[in-house]
Image (cartoon, rainbow, N blue to C red):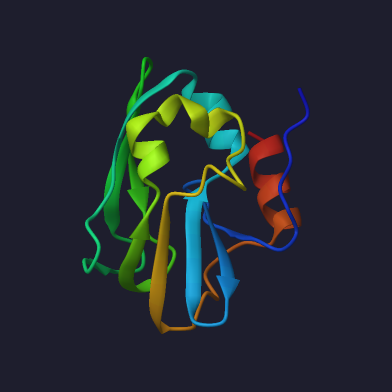
Length: 128
């Protein structure tokens, strides 16, 4: 199976992605992370209004194999949670970059310099 890494996203080496649209960031986990986790059974996300701190955990994703912390690529405030993914986390595997987003965050700081481009992320995960 060939995994995709859309060029319009920025990635963390911990496998989260961020899509920037003005001062709104959409955050999710990469197809690679979904593939490595296997069957995802539970998703814990922050509440609307919660603060996001770059590099800090904002929730967990649990599969039959492991529980992994989710790390924030941005500084901001949660403005939307993807309730469909919370209720049916197994659907993350179907469309991690589209319907499978996790959070929308209003940015307090537009700096995402510590993120990786799609090519850099592809090299990281395909070299593992």
